[in-house]
Image 1: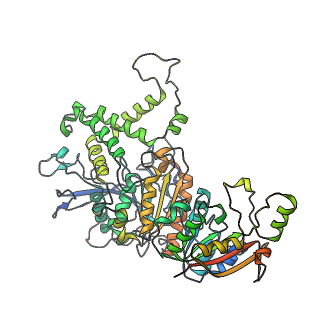
Image 2 (image 1 turned 180 degrees about the horizontal axis):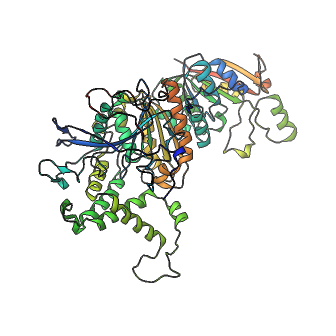
Image 3 (image 1 turned 60 degrees about the horizontal axis):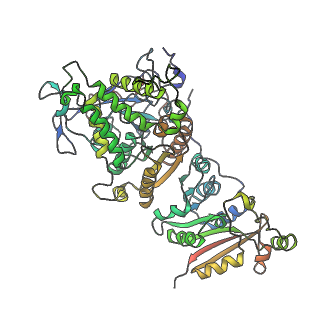
Length: 212
Length: 411
């Protein structure tokens, strides 16, 4: 009997985390993608299998890297703050940073680096401007839990609480243009133009460098 | 004697050898030549029909071509990487044709300082030309040619084996598709050269060494070689693994003797290993191989590591370092990964948590098996590597020249 264990392509997740699903919908097939802080490779595996992207990941934890390798992904263990310097300019079409921006020391540097290495950046982040967060702080005097993030403030090294309006203003200041925006509220995509800073729990933006 | 576990092993293997450069001398990096050149090797598993499933395993400083299986039914020990090579193991011999090649300069069946110099009819000794990692690899390229393999699926090795892997990738990029470099470096640092030199000085200082002419005297520079090995051995461990393994325990003593006997367990262990090493290794080979490692600097002559990989960006790399390795510390691997990233290569890198020091590449079997298995899975899928044919024990005859031994026989 044959004992061959020729590998089967690993099935991509049938159901992605909602914000990852939105991100995946924004990535064109066969593009070159770098996923920063790619965790266990859930999104990257989906993009590689379903959209035939050329995917690369960077992940800090050994556990995450091992999980990514198990999924057949190309991933580097490393710190985002140091990691991007090695990548040549414009070597990717899309550089993704999902739900990680609040934890980084220097958001401006990382966004600029993402747009040096890639022609587009996709960033998703929790929106502390969500109405429940506002109400929570007003009524209880305690900082609200970050929307759509499971960790408590003392369980992570640090986080910066900011809102959609804060982020949009920040992008303008550092010469970054938001070209596409998508919003989620508690795990569902919502279609809003007005009041998004009040209604969305998570924002997903495609960013480009302004050319002026 | 151990009972051989055949189900988990490649079984009984026969050492093989390949001799070349009989007519046209083999040109070495130093400018010297060598003729003829013999390379010892072993193979495990079977070659597939299009010869695309071959993996070359390269060994570390004191390794040999005997990487897996047993040489005889009552062999007390399997090959040096038996944990990782075999059916269902990291290098799965059900899927891959695994070749392990000895290096030139070694005393394990390849041409080295203990070989007979055809010009004199006596062992070369110090008349053996100095060899480099590049020379070792070019000799392996000849072996792969001989086996009729155009392109290896992968070259894999740790420590000095990792240097050979990088040399293959940088200088023979069309001959392989992927590279697995474990616990290694792209250049020997001054500290590593310093450790090598202490080992060599110990050998020079042994009166039996006699400028390398000891083969016919019956007196080998064992004391010097044992010290060299003891120094080397310390660099393979870590403070934590030594603490765990020996602590400050005494060997067969209740209290300190206040004399210069072997008292601590760690002393006894080093002495045992040093002495054991003299029974299996040639002092001159130790000199030549450590020198080859010291000369290794992949960034020469371009001056930049990235430039040296300029033609190798299409390869897939798996680089693994170990957190407690202080001989080839993680930052050496990180420099390598940075250079590979800069040229746009597909590189997977992990810095594995381990307390074993440099030896981790031989000991962290479980994690490495999973990693290497997954990495090779991806290669098989992406490169569409067919399995070897069922039932055929021997692969098709190698390419020219004729009259070569059959490839792929594991028993």
